[in-house]
Length: 77
Image (tube, rainbow, N blue to C red; front, side, top):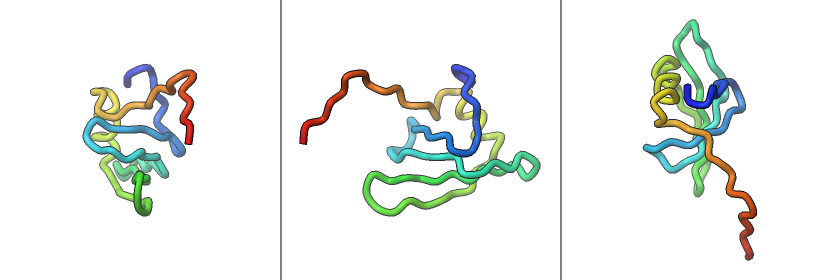
């Protein structure tokens, strides 16, 4: 995986293919499943079941990534 990202419950990530922030809820390697909570910018969060091996591969390929914080980013309301 890029930058040795440890995939575990609680990990929040983004994707090149969807706008929501996602979070790993549970991993079951034996059943080849990962439960991911999709946190939409607007609307309710929902959970989806994805294939575990494919999810790991998408991290390796860079489709899923950890967003980098922007230093000194200040939003004025």
